[in-house]
Length: 101
Image 1 (cartoon, helix red, strand yellow):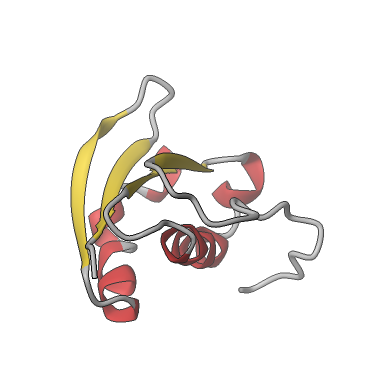
Image 2 (cartoon, rainbow, N blue to C red):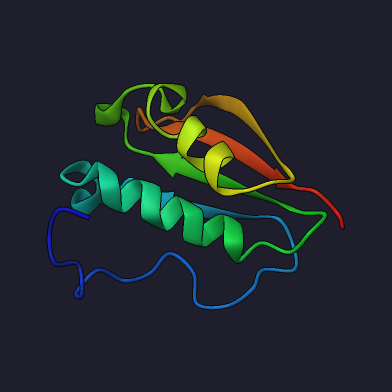
């Protein structure tokens, strides 16, 4: 990350044993793409096998395929990444399926 983010609330605090969404489009995320990538990784790591997490990213970063997907696929084996749609606020939703073991 480019800045000290000690004051940034994590997107997850526990393992999610159901499908869920991670909000990565808060004002702090707009200014720090590295934070988006780091917290997207954290969200996937906290998602139990057999479920998915929707990563909601700010529209100012552009389509997540251009900066996020390769990073996630390089970090994790056993995930499937798909684009869902733009949300009403202009952000983008990427769904990451965590495959069962």
